[in-house]
Image: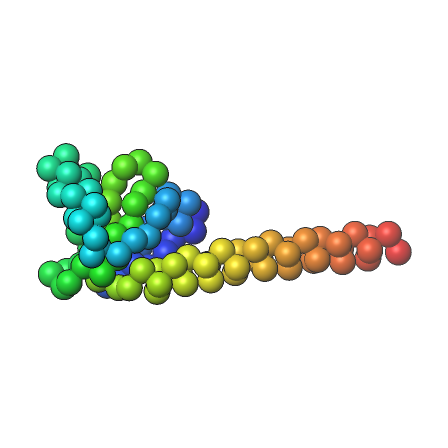
Length: 102
């Protein structure tokens, strides 16, 4: 399970994120209001201005005080790191196979 830092030491599971959006538009503000009423809102802003709304696969909304681009970059870099680690593991496995054939 890969965790993404959404600010102030708060982490979200990368696999649960569906979308990262800006809170400025009226439809997103309505979604936030509905989530608050249904107790599906997680406020991770620590009293600061909301800059990103993270939509999770279970219907929860997570408010973050960092920019959506920053969250997306962290998500992207985490994915690239795990892919490169998987690639390195595969290369290592191949090296072991070559040495065991000798």
